[in-house]
Image (cartoon, rainbow, N blue to C red; front, side):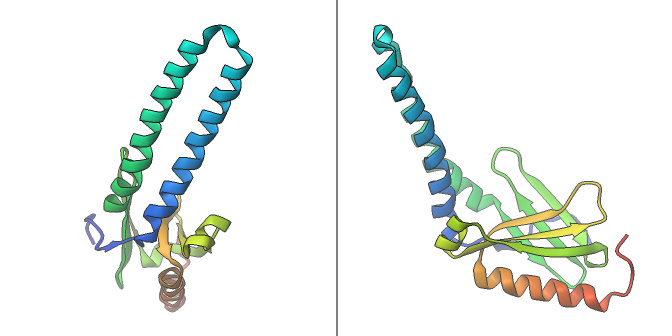
Length: 160
């Protein structure tokens, strides 16, 4: 085993999901700025400048981040290990031997269900914490959980 880029990209639907999440955050910031502007009549010029800056930064984030993340986020499972790569500015690659897996979980929030996505968390005995594979198609996540569960069931060690 060696630390290398995993082979599989996450679902293309993750781009839309990450875009929606980013957009929601920026809309909340704009809403707070608008309320502040409406209640502070003396500094409208500065508030408008702030709104324009927020709009430019928000638009750049909403357009760039989801696509960049999609190109970076990868995963792979072999008979020996689980490989993950995630992030967009701060990128991380992780590997976990199948023999070290303690639990395998899948999770779907309401917006992930809307996009047909799921997340898989692979917990090991590592102090670095679990491996998370976010943005998988729901069917792919179910198959991955089944495969990892079968793989860990055949290994009789205690995963520590």
